[in-house]
Length: 187
Image (cartoon, rainbow, N blue to C red; front, side):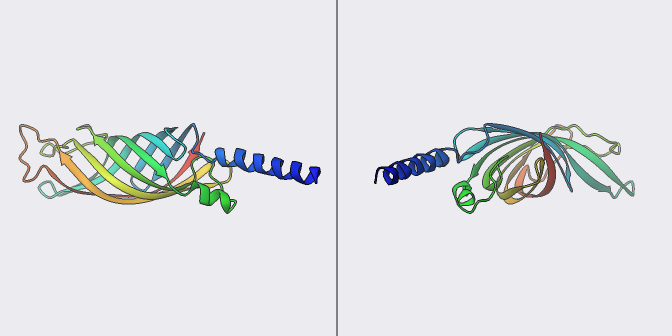
């Protein structure tokens, strides 16, 4: 009887300790490449299920200039902050699935800023206008092996363009789409 009681107490303490370990990583760094650019990121834990993702990257863009009859490929710097709520960590652990490196499903509020800088060459009659966007996003992140990850997400939100003195904009705000598919390496 004493052995059985001791076994139950040990099992209960193990389950309690395991349940307390279900959390996002304290801090994780990585680099990701997608169809639309390359990004370096950090995720820092705010609570057991919420992490703040900060990201510095280069978004790829192709534009067509009808006046010059040309198409150009440019890169635009992107600064992003996105609190992410990983809502299914307990369910993943209960099914013996990985949660290391913040593997799981998430809901984020992605806030991105593009300054009016361009890496590449724009035609003389073309201006890049800086913008800020706030996009609620649903996504997933999974690990492949020890360090490799893949991530996908989709969301729709708000974008605001900062009007310049020499540029006329018919509208300074509108709808923005976040659609990403990335593979990455976690340090």
